[in-house]
Image (cartoon, rainbow, N blue to C red):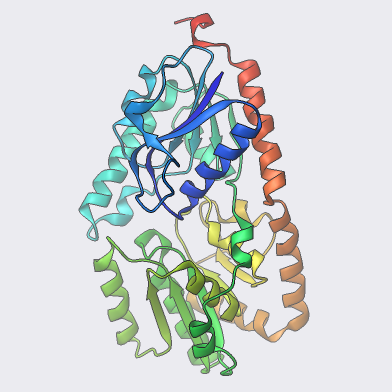
Length: 366
């Protein structure tokens, strides 16, 4: 029996790509014939990691396709043609409205993705959602198939690698308090709200502070330039936009940070929250979308995106060593729930249940 993974784009280093590659090893370890197939394959990936969609082998009714859904693609409308069982892994789609005025192509892709997501509602036999929030999105779109929650597999071993020493030496031990937010620079992530909160903190709580905004702005240059103008209008110094940087530099900024501040308005999971847990950074996050699901009772949830409220909460955490220890300890507990062995067990159990309970296509009523 074959259990194959299918997706529009397999990228190097992003959360979905990491998840797909990790699942490939798990599926292989379960004894199934497997492989990764994509329309677009990142050229930086090792040769043989994946193959083009047209090279998929012949499928039978008992075989399974794990389809990773996160964007607009023709695959969303052709998946039903494959004569096998279909299990969709839903990673969320950013609502198109966020991209309006910044990137029309991204907005159209998101709209196309939403049409595809609606189309698939009665075309798949089961769904795995990254978060309870994502599961609720599917139910709102009238998905009637079984929906389970399975957080993505996160390669924690990578975070133990050596951070970039030039970045460390540039900022280390200079007496500054460092805020950090990690994630692509995009309107749904509301970097302007992070900047507003940091401005309040710097002005009213601690002038010797700095903000690291770590993430690529490729494709979102209009939004990025608007953020830079906003920083200038506030006459705010010590705001560092890294742009796209090597992984070792990302690690360095995590090591330098004192607090992780997330004001995102839409997340399907938000891997950087779990990364912050790993680096023992106290987390303050606006309670939107899947944020509370990922934090799982850890960190500090902000009920609004009010910048002064966020600044005062950050100041309270940073001045209270005992509170920080408590927050970090609870986050460490939550991070252990995302450990590779734990998520692997969840995935194996859910995949076996799907295979055992969903009959082969030939035996199902057409």
